[in-house]
Amino acid sequence: AGGRSSFQNVGRTLRRGVELAARWQPSARWHAAVAATWLDATYRDDFKTCGPPPCSTPAVLVPAGNRVAGTQRASAFAELVWRGAAWGEWGLELRGAARTMANDSNTAWAAGHGLVGLRWSKAYALSSGLKLELLARLDNAADRVYAGTVIVNEGNRRYFETGAPRNALLALR
Image (cartoon, rainbow, N blue to C red):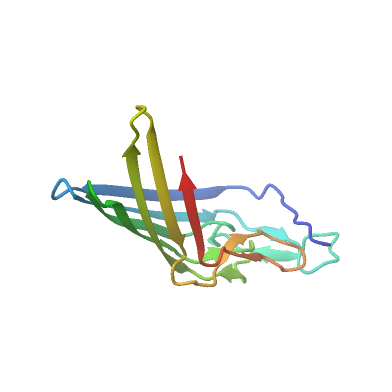
């Protein structure tokens, strides 16, 4: 309550998952990479939790088989990169996440989302033997509105914090 979350030991859980990743480079200029994760995280025992505040005694039954709050069943990443000596490195990134449960009762969740990112970088050799690197990024290029953070079991049911809107980065190293 009052912006606070509460947590308790709840008995047994089961977490099973698989992660796969692959890279492919068909030529010196092109490469691609993909990664995917699948996670089955569930409670194995029933337990009771609090409902809306005020709550001094947990009374809401959370049945075995509910997903563990704060976990995503699946996520994925893919990128396609082109490198050219004169033009630097250009990349397209795709990120996806399945919905994320926000509470133990599994009655609230953040919707799944997909994001697109673009990047460019180039290194320059200076006459002094030093190297100068430039990087430009555009994240969330489609300016999607999504839950970037889930506050698990937040007492007032304000579970979500909005993810970053379209944003740009220019870096010099």
